[in-house]
Image 1 (cartoon, rainbow, N blue to C red):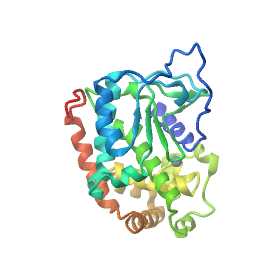
Image 2: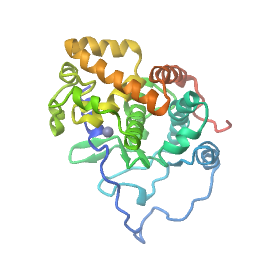
Image 3: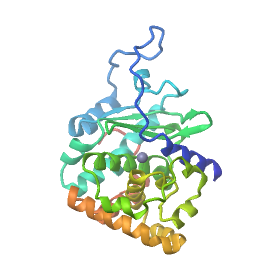
Image 4: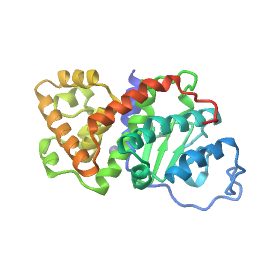
Length: 292
Ligand SMILES: [Zn+2]
């Protein structure tokens, strides 16, 4: 499992990195700058992402939307369809369900979700997801996902925890969380040194993951993303590992819960129940056909 952990380390490392350059397309580029002909999937995306949520779901490799520093592979067509259906069911529809309408995601959701088939390798590190200014979320390594066997732990670990992590950034960038949260772990943040501590050590220092120990905003979004994408048994197991430092994690969750309720009218516990229920249904979704 070392490989996975290493990738997870890299996953959040790139979070919040600056957006790609706006270079003009090279004339010899194999990537078309023309609007492509719409296929059935494009039409499905119009009806399920663009019209209802104003989200541009890009599965084609468009050079201008990809980071030039990486050597990237396009997402496979069938995997893109499956991922589009899963992102909608597990992420968008969870918020629409709890809010009662589409307005929240329309207003605060990213304006673009971009799929890349390969992981992004960069000097021995691997990036799985990036978010740029709350506008665009890129999910990498889509071709590693097997639509005929959608294991929810795998999906959460590689894709959906990232979505919730980045979306929580968008929320606190819109309205900042209370100062009390800053005070809980003041002086204990590790910055770039987070790569040197294990998740167990992080827990024993009052952080839900090692990446949460980098700085206060990552701490905040990791609390939310991990709470939503894991069940109560997992959370309790982390608290046990944390020992006496569980009090810090509890205090952080309390503030995050109050913030989500008072600022966004979202009951975090209820959101978790919705996400968990939907996660348990993911395996029985039709991830192939576009007739819904
Ligand atoms: Zn982050």
